[in-house]
Image (cartoon, rainbow, N blue to C red):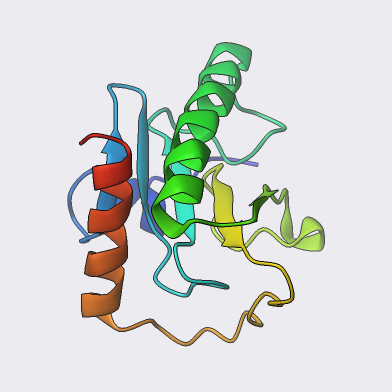
Length: 140
């Protein structure tokens, strides 16, 4: 399949759509998920165009994994989470909705289930506060 340059994450990477950034390097961007399954839900995306794990360049995938670890440590610290759920979906049948490879980092708490994926957008002020907490934990 061909990479769609107009997918929502490509537009975020180009600055055409807003996001609440928490972490950025020359190769990745991490930002708040606008439809979170839990407080502090972050997405980490490579800047290189790739649909998913099936076509991403191996070096970009390795770098993505490295940066997911950095973000995950910051998210866990910022939210004093008991654990983390890290998810990455591939193709429609695998649950992928946006066709730019991305990794979900979700802080988890004992006895608290993930919220269902309802498509409901989170309050922007709450996302901004969460992003600030994570940036502070990451020293950014």
